[in-house]
Image 1 (cartoon, rainbow over the protein chains, first blue to last red):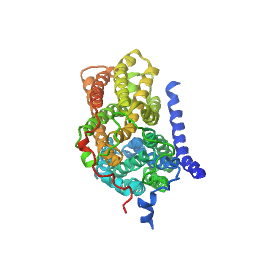
Image 2 (image 1 turned 60 degrees about the vertical axis):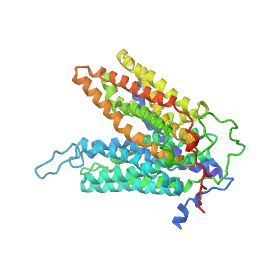
Image 3 (image 1 turned 90 degrees about the vertical axis):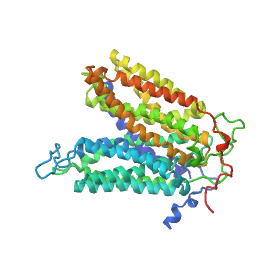
Image 4 (image 1 turned 30 degrees about the vertical axis):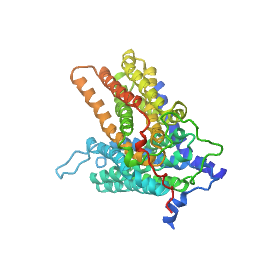
Length: 32
Length: 462
């Protein structure tokens, strides 16, 4: 069950982290 | 076989099921449908389907590119249908359970993209209104409420945090969809196409598959299940009921309408800012902030909209729901009334800081409301009641942007410089927040005469 939980959380967490990274990359221009 | 897999009975979890497996199902649904917040990235490409690099004017044959006004209606239809579908299908979602409703939501949402791709192919705008707007909007409404009551039942000890995780996904969906859409359009772009058709088709397939994670992982707790070691508090907080109120009774109570106004006012204030965020910061800080920097500001607002959903909803488990909304409204009034001064002082970091806090409370309002409903009306029909309350979002979705736009244009027409054209709007929004604060303070427990007399119906029909 633990492996299943890790797979499920990675499946939804990785795209979200990618989205957060791209957003922060964009937002950094605000303070340059 | 498929019908059996989708049935509510098939989703009842064994007593030793680990509830940590449930939030990803909700996140898969909400991260997908949250794409709607990023639909504006298609606005300009959709007005250049014929001209490709520019918007082709209507020629002698009557054929030309769609205008910006034609295209922005797609988003408005989708949001209006979201609220309506959530209200209409709430009871059905409660009856059939999260798996079947998420599956239907995936079919509608992905189907909306496919129908829109066909509309782009034939350059027929009505298909986009019916596709993404109506069909996709139904997917948004059903997908939004599908996992909420399930999560509340899995996390009776932390209902705010649980719904915060799910509804955080709706805010996070835009963070993924915005760069993804741009990347896909760039990838499919050719000299004769700007790639919108292929992007719609690809996103339809991708989101359908992603939402299947939610369909697969959706589970409801067995009757009588409780978290290990958890004992319901002997003396619950004053507004937290142990009783249940049926959905058809709930909307006749004053509490439902007080909460409707609370949600509507909080969303109106936030969505007004979102709708004008980019031009607003460019006009207030003219010469310092260009369109590219403003896009960074909009991205930051989206990020805090998402963070606020988890943060404030989790905090509400400790603060209490009513107190959390008191913070939203009181701090909101303070911040909205300070923004004009920050703009005049030219303080960009403080201006940005004020708005990221405001947007965190906008998201927090959405994420805290299901737990508030659960406190006031019990868990029996909380999903369906939540669906009906979301009509407040539909109203706010029109009211906020219209108000912001009308007030700004009026000030500019009266000779006010663009940089100061937003001040009056901010003070008007303070008035909206004050109304929300009063309604929230007026919240009292639901009278016993509204309580459901029979035991709550079993979660699986026998």
